[in-house]
Length: 236
Image (cartoon, rainbow, N blue to C red):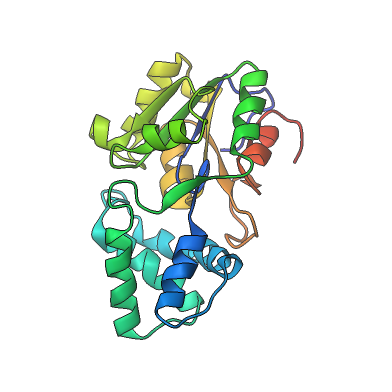
């Protein structure tokens, strides 16, 4: 499903990797502590590639918050950085689990997040967040001044259902008071965000900053603000 010719009445966003970015500097510093000098730009590029490799693991019924999924994600990121020694991988996995144990690594606002929310609100649409999270997404958005323009936030740990289950998108539609055909979702994982939204009848835009997802049967955007512009028909 692609965005309709008319602007949606509701636009819902993923949080992690869409409105909130991973702290690439923290990963670079941890790697440096293991003797692997990698700058944050290299870490970011590796993480963008790791998302695509992770996608086949994200079948329905497999939690994106599981230890196994996070383990695959980190291992792929490290492989793209040339870090393959099992001792280093295990050490980085321990570091990941201990780093900000409550909120994890998603602690930096995306540079275009505020603009995306402002663009959506300026168009008069209902703005929501649907996130597979551990109960911290609201706090993280509030801490970065991003919560005010958002009409509602759905955290999977609070409602007992995760993307790509269509039920979590149905909860958002009910809170927004719009039909599925009047709403769209913006996220960074094809199997979870695009296919999940479509299963619930929503349009979807995939965040793909550098084209690493390749040709997909959905619109792709550089960032959340670009995604909103696509949905509003302001640009391709």
